[in-house]
Image (cartoon, rainbow, N blue to C red):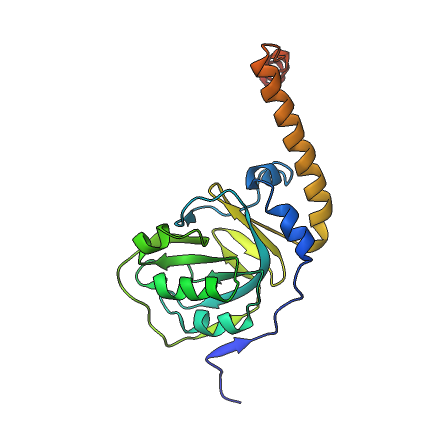
Length: 223
């Protein structure tokens, strides 16, 4: 059997829209603080216009050769409204995987955002839009279209493993991914976390913030 330029697997089931809607109201930092603070991407940056809602969607994943977007082009056919397209391009910054046109098309078909562990271009155009685009860097050099690649396989972007069907969330602070069956408890913990933070802000405004916890933290560090 000849080797296929792109190895394709079906997309995983879409995450419940109610769960995604709830996650869009929660900052990524509040989720991260309830995931041991050691999960998430490093080195990927948001290039779109900052917006209040958190990006949240079902992961459609792709692995491509650095600077090549044939796999990205095909992977768009596997995306449904509510999905986030996550592309492991090996962190390569020599050629852009996508630019203004292909990110615009992703938005037009209902994709919730694009994550590229590689380079993008047309950044001035992308920064004018609210459609989430995350990438490792920028170059004016355009993509090749030769493959090879894989669609809907486990990938690594910014040091974070993303499996097909994972929930991917992102805001200006960064990106997280987790399994859908973890979402309900994570949402519950994050909302409690936000409520506690709101109470701290209230206490600060009223001049009654209890700082005694600092003494306990310092004592714990003394040997």
